[in-house]
Image: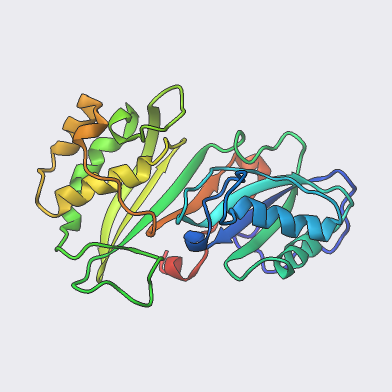
Length: 279
């Protein structure tokens, strides 16, 4: 299957068919992904389920690959739901988008077998954190990138980040509110690169703890600014103490970019959106 399908099947699916969908959203105006009672600001999940339900003329609920926090964006969130009426993938994509605000879009929809689960079938998740390293806070990218005024050395950050590779205890980088029963996570890739006035951190792991990426980035910024040595990241890991690590980086620059699944599902895996064209 092509990485970014431009056409979608117009063949109606049997009622009860399970679909996997890729969701792109600007998290700036949402209270995160997960539906929660008594919130004054909508969540992405509520907004998406409302649009899907309008297409189905009945309630539709989704499960996602990874819940994102308030202000965090996605170009690769994956959800699944069971089609209650038997519409085509094309109808689900364009019909749902017609009921969504401009800040949320269904990018693709494909049928999957009933064993597929957006969260539990995933083998890894990939995030990108984008920092504008400029003297003045950007206006046109407000809410889309984080901002650090002081000069950052991306090479120092890259070398320090390599201490995070492998299956390790990430207690030093988990939020106090994290509900995971273990702090062990397996980071398969992390890269820090300077691209003009941007510093970009890409990180992929089997799963992430609450605030793990933003906590890692906060500490890497301390290294990149020269406030801490490169070896500090390894010391934080060994110490397992969140209170001695750097502050949590802002949510603005964080994107869920890719969720990977076993090849048997043949899901599209491209990274989309204008901030990712160079990839």
